[in-house]
Length: 280
Image (tube, rainbow, N blue to C red; front, side, top):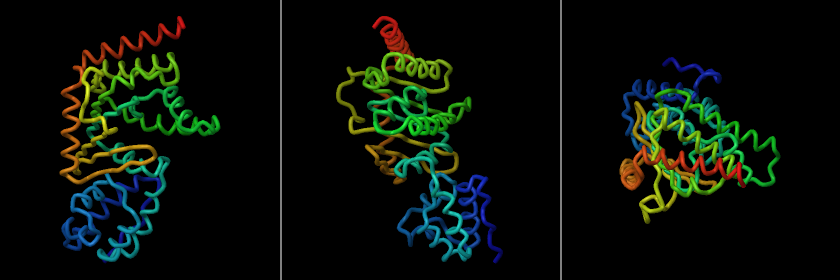
């Protein structure tokens, strides 16, 4: 059997590795379910590896090499996928986010990272890491802004953001920073680059009070859900769990202000912050 060549590290290794996995599996006559069963992972998980929406870990790579007779190809090359500029708990989610066609995101206290401004991000990172050097903070901000480049594409991904009113009223970085951050969000909504709703305090108790929620859909792989806490995160592919969290997001949508009303509120608060900066 002709074995695949090692991947070029300058290419997209995760997508290429997934493509090689699919070819090797089909060549061996195995279904996704059969390949995943010994690892106690679902066929849909194997499909996500093949589509490049999930990262291949070494234990999986070793198994694939043994079962598919690929001579250590997957074990050698999955090391390229282990390198990430993101924290371990977020790396897989960030990689999936980069290839998602649709992202639906609710955060209870913050403006989502994909649509943050540099000053807003810097204020957050400084609060998280009060002893970090300015250079370290700048690197963290640059990494977050790199993620935000996804929004430079005029149509993809579709980003539906639900902002809690708490995120609008907490003055991260002070009035000037908040005015800029909210104007940026409003501009994205006004240009129809994002769909944005505000979940007002008047909604009372709601289904998302337990924490943040990010749902991602893909062109050629099942959807994923990412749940995040303090220095921890979990990427979920179980269909029943993803469906349940999708319902949670639907409930939040129903409680949120309509997009036009949400835009008016964000505009108004940006104006108030700007006025506060000019007339403290």
